Length: 222
Image (tube, rainbow, N blue to C red; front, top):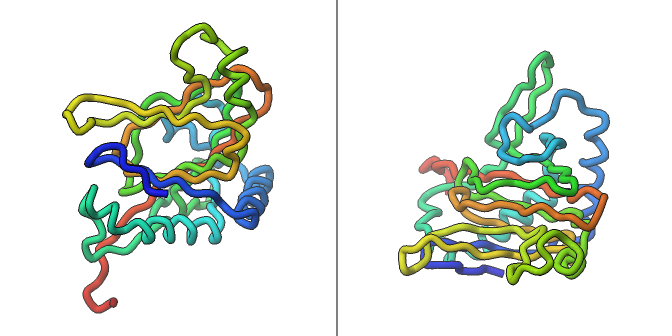
């Protein structure tokens, strides 16, 4: 589903298939066999466990399909797709003291209770986040989490910040919990966003994120 926040801000929300979730699970299992792939030094998160990870082909294709499906809506908002192709494999990173090379611009966060991601944006043209495993229930967060007496219930929320149609700084909170596992969000890389801490679970909140670049298409390619 394409969601227009303001005339220049938007996000796409979609659900991954069971096959895609299974493919992600397999790639996460490979992390134990991979060394020197910490991503913390390149990321904004106040999260101890952040690692580079390969996004499965099935998920890449789905991300591209979603962008293409809402192409006309995106054009109206951002004026993209001018003689360009999408590239999810444009990033090249070589860890210290190893010959291995990560030719992808994607990473996985294992967020613990109290950890958070401050407001930040990304490189590239588009960014995405996959809520692979959300370990808490939003109602528990509202009742038993910190600030339960506050009128604003934001524990564990994903937040977008933007300039609204009245040219004022604004934000939108997107609540998420275990019922949203397997959800994909796609949005412009320049769009500021953050993730609030959670308080009612000792399990990891596991999410995958990455960037997508658009490349000028050679004129001899149709």
